[in-house]
Length: 287
Length: 271
Image (cartoon, rainbow over all chains, first blue to last red; front, side, top):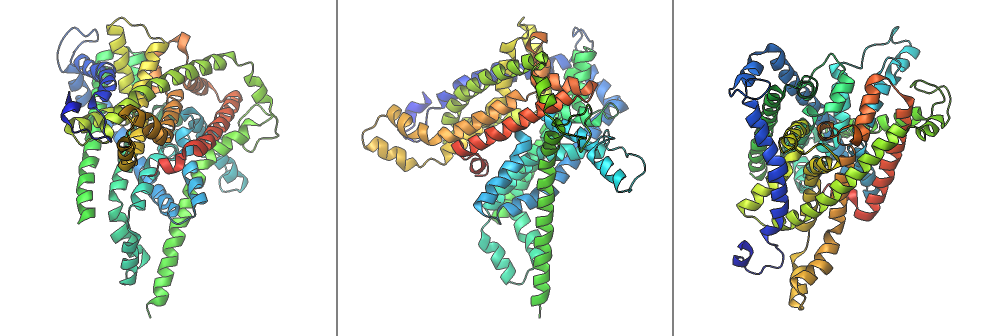
């Protein structure tokens, strides 16, 4: 119907073509999430008594709040590391020839396309007691006994940063490619040094890319179940594993639902904050 | 005067940025190389560097029937999910790509949301829905769940390809008397094909590798490869898993090279 009212523009297609996917999403994506929310509003494990007891339980339990806090902190640390390492990659990309550019992209893409278990397994081999770092440090005499790298926060952050790097780097490469090179030249010829030009011109103009990259990296880092559980080990508990334990091992579906909803809202809040910053930064970039 | 200072400053900037970039690239690629090297060990442990080299653990893989079974399941589910994602995703991308209406933007956000929302929460909710309607977990429930989380890649890449399409090409085709359907088949489809293939490729890889959704939607009959590997790794560090990882890394690199040839993958993801 809508298509008929639009003038016959050959470059656009009827919105009706989106109907099958919309229906598919309503049935298999939106409906399950609504049902998840409904189940979280039950006080008992059987799901018979209505109430907000599960949320009260979570929000008054120091242990649960601790898991949420450490998960959000983990995301921030991974995102920061990805930004510090990813920005120079994007910068280098625009200063090399096209063959080197292709190589850089393929290297950056490799972890994204490699199986998550494989790349996590690789970090176990690197960080383990007999791993590369420990055996190197032992052989050069820097340490006497193996140091603990696996099952530490730093290990999880490093492994996650490697895995999520494409999500940060690809938007940055796109954003840097859109910056008018003349602006950098102008800044330099007006007497600003390279560092000053970077902080005052390049970084602010690339903010839309920075924000897009941070959003994707943050969301991926806090939901990265496999890497968190294998590198973090039993001592460190983050939201995905907490959710999985409650749902699968303890079969406490209403509480698992409440954890899911709180987790979803936390992710949505972060995405919204980043999204708002993104709109502001575009205004800044255009000014 | 200031010339020398500026030069030093420019050099320090270039050196710092290049050094960090190179370190980052090495950190990104090192784990894959390490696994490849370790997988060719002739020993029983995952020591690096290995005491000696052999392909014995790759030979072991031939007998690992549990891994074969899981790999076959993962492959079949990934094929179906990719097929479904491409059919539904391309149609939806055509509808929303060149439309600035509110409904098109709302749909775009809806189709992209599985990218940021925790897949584990979706997996749990899908399991609860299927159990509510009395649908036992099976390959079908896996395909449905995977399609939801894979479709964003197809939609995003197809929308990007459509956005780069020259409207004048389509207009001239119509002016020259071609029907809309003929224009779509002979002009639009060939031009967006690389984008669709790139999106389908990423969708396939992410389905083949999916853990959070599969965790809830599979049973013993539909064991999936990444979950099998994860469970094997939690128990012990198995060298067979290293060999399997080696196979997967080589296959991934080979597929990436083919995709780079066929679709210009690297340019497609940065435009």
